[in-house]
Image 1 (spheres, helix red, strand yellow):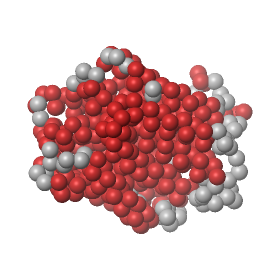
Image 2 (image 1 turned 90 degrees about the vertical axis):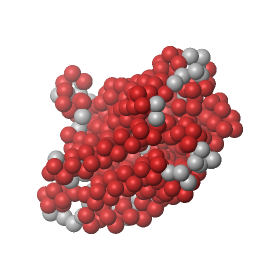
Image 3 (image 1 turned 60 degrees about the vertical axis):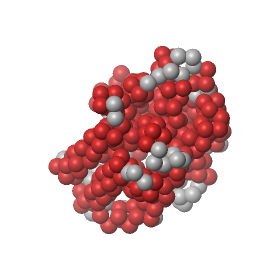
Length: 407
């Protein structure tokens, strides 16, 4: 696929960007309603946590294999078959009759979703030239933020009006639409010299891409906080009765995410990811505190807005960092490594919250303890990750160039 002279908004880039938005919208709509779904079939908080653990296990198992397959076999097969299969697997939740069956469907669903999302990310990178790469990755990361901000509210609206059939049916349609979009995509062919047998690869290279690992760890901290709150947020808001319409939380969060888009380009152009780490840590701590202890709707919405800005900054900034020093032939592995940070830590956060809520019988106590995540997040960056070659100041110094630009 020749992209050297093409601008950013090529038909292929627009197709893959929209397909990714549809897939992530489906996933986030499911995330906001999954706890309600579990309770509706007789499950409890701990079952929500176990499903998060199952999701992490499936993603951790599949993503490294998906990254290898994308780099050494076919970009096309994984994207198309992954989306096609996922649309139909999603329908299994409608007909599940027990929590144990949901466990199984959740594992299969998470495994296929991990493969499909890794494929979309990798193919998006392939559409970009050197001149448009940073900007294109930035918009692709921003589509993650948009889905994270808007889809949960859509999921709750569908649940209130149509129940499980409405939620999972709409999700299946969304994913299938993404599949149809990708059918017209021009996929990058894998050169013959890269089609090496699986057993010839080094174990380390098969499992992860070291250039993307620091960004994956940073994103993991954000994912842990998000994964610990989102599965239980709807139930928490309903129990507290501070916000009569839980969907308004996601509307405020979406406003914060869109506001972040106005900030992240200017920040990244001049200072890279460092201020994103510091600013987002403060915003997340203020936002979670406001959500947890609010007794009036305006404080809940203020907390949602601050958390939305945090998501918008980090998802875009860290995704650029994840491929900053990675060669094109390792983009599949880099996509896998970066995404594993979100999958694994998000699921760990969900399981942790399930344990804390069960132990203390209090959502408020559990959410308060989550604030400890963010000082560790900042210290990890300052003491370790800021010294890695993918950190902005080190990359700029080594490359002998000006700062990367996100328009």
